[in-house]
Length: 583
Image 1 (cartoon, rainbow, N blue to C red):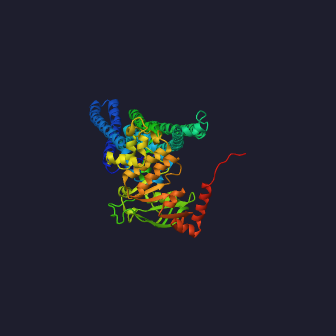
Image 2 (image 1 turned 90 degrees about the vertical axis):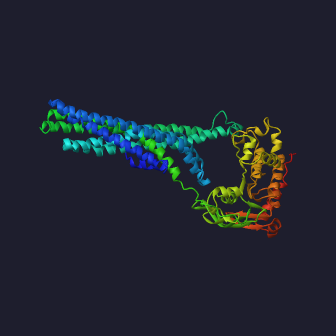
Image 3 (image 1 turned 180 degrees about the vertical axis):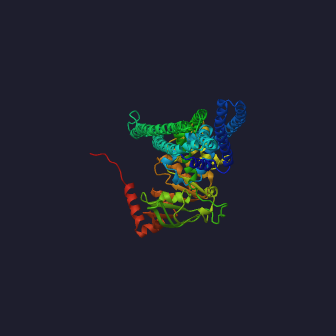
């Protein structure tokens, strides 16, 4: 079991600010291990003089041992306090450090699997790392340093016994490494299954309405059942993987002890060591293998903790979006420009290919195209949720990569089709758009988006909590709150993913009125499906297979007779459909 990778990962997750504390702690742990080894090695002269009748020599060596033991106790206390201090640093700063880092990662990093893994990292993983400093690292390091010190001190009394100690070292190393790998592999299996199971539990809890609507509320959810079964299977497999490693570690420790006893007995039988020396050797052998037995017992727990350390380090190793020290000043507020943009979520599957168009300030552009043509990707790239693979995106006349995130986001407001509201008050959810907005500005944004009509029906008005995800409101009402956020933010650019696509007539009316307000003050880029939204646009950009197939006004594109004209005819036919009773 190698300690160096563990220490390297620990230094990485603590960061430059706290690495000195880690080094100081390790120095004291090593000092504790060395002093413990020296105090054990002093047993040899003490016993030799005591058993041979040299009481003056025994008193001298006992005095030396007493001094070393006191120093060992001091070192043990100091390293323990240093270890607890570093553990507290981990528990108090790790969440903040991980949170600050993931906040700078591309949104594409946040897959369901990554979110589930991140959830476990910031809960059980952080606690495990704190426990590593508080309880595991000291016996691990001292359990290695102490036997090495004893072996080094033994050279001065009998080099042959020291050689016997060193002979067992490779066996111990291989056994402990193999044991740790087995336990680590089992822990990785359990971790993967636990992440999947946790995701399925959250999914089951959040989607109760859908499940019950299809009669699955009582019978359960098959993906959840499968995930829990797999977690149970993985846990059992992990347990069986750890058993051989534990047995191997114990066997290797006993092997080292046996080698020392046999070597001592052979030397005694050959006359090289007297019986008094043999007794001292046996005592030293016990002190040599004692810390190793503790290392063997802890190897599995340490490897599991190292897995958690490595997972945290892996998150911190993820490259954030590069940001300039300061943003290039905006030259054309409200303008959106895409020039030769190419992008793919994976290297082998491009989503956008050489996309170019410009949306002048205070105009409205509609993105039209079949599902999968890249419409939503365009809006996400404008907000710099990802970086383009090629080409340039400019907002306000400046490349989004030359703007700091807060400066870019100050220019952009987004209204998604799938609205998420936080478990906060109605007013608090609107203030997400601009926390420093005055009460009058929040109320005016609510009035323009039709939220005031919702407030009148709620028991506590603006102070009513909407529940996690906005569960207390309907889909249309959540959409109104989302648009109120955009209005109160008063950003030069607003990106909308067809805000009226799934609304009833009443909610659609409020939303359309709010959109008219936004059009009077901001540049709008709308992913459009409904004909009134498309016709109202100053510019229509038709995407097809990741490329700009057509670009122009409604009359121009109809006259061209291309893809947009086909889209228009299809939507008009669908608009004329009626359900009639059969006769």
